[in-house]
Amino acid sequence: MLAKEAGLSTDLPNLAANGGRFVLYKVGAVLAADHGMGTPSVSILLHEMFKLLYYAHCTDVTFIRLGTSGGIGVEPGTLVITTEALDTAFESVYSLRILGKTVKRPAPLDINLADELYELAQTLPDNVPVVKGKTVCANDFYEEQARLDGAFCQFTESEKMAYLNQACSMGVRNFEMECTCFAAQCYMAGVRARPSTTVFPDKDHYAWSLEVYFKHKGP
Image (tube, rainbow, N blue to C red):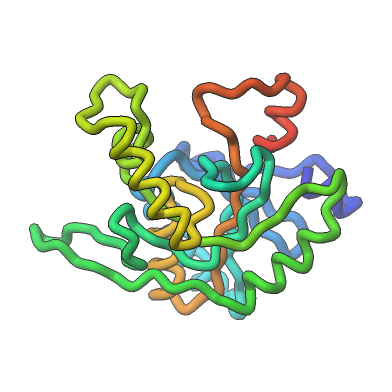
C-alpha cells in the first residue's frame, strides 16, 4: 500500500523474513514494521528496531505507531492522535519488572508531532474524523479495559461506567494495549514518537460491513 501511494514498485522484499517474528519493509525513507498485541510484542520490536537503526547510522528518525483501539466519546472510525499515553490508573508511566523490582518509566510524547499529524490528517480522503486526545494503555483486552463480556468479570456495569466516565472527563478518547511502552522506550532512545489509532465501536462486537471494517482496519 505504501509503495503504491508513493508511486514505487510494489515488488518489495520482507527484510525480516528470516527472523520469523515480524515483517519489515522499506519504501523510500519509510521503514514499516508490524508487531503483535500488547506491550511485550511492541517492546521486543522496539529493542530490535533501535539497535538496527543504530548500526545503520540512522539519525533524526520519527516513530509513528498505527493501530486500532476502543473509543470513548468519539464516533466509530475516528482517528485518534494521542496527546498523552496513560496506564489504567491514569499515570503517564510505563511499568515493568526488572530483576524482580517494579520500575516506572516516564512516557512523554512529542507535542509538536501531534500537531503536525493532526494537520496532515485533515487532508485524508472520505472526511475521516480526526481528534487529539489522551490514550489509555491496558495490559489486558477485557477486564483492564472495563469490558463485561470476558470469561471473568468481578465488577458491575455501574462501576464500569463510573470508570469510563472518569476517563472521558480527563480527556481520554481511546483504550489500546501499547502506547505507554511505545512512548517510554522511544523517549529513552531519544526519538520523536506518536501513536495514532482508528477507533472501533467494540473490537469483538462490530456492526459494520466487512468492506467498512477492513477499510478502517488497514492491510
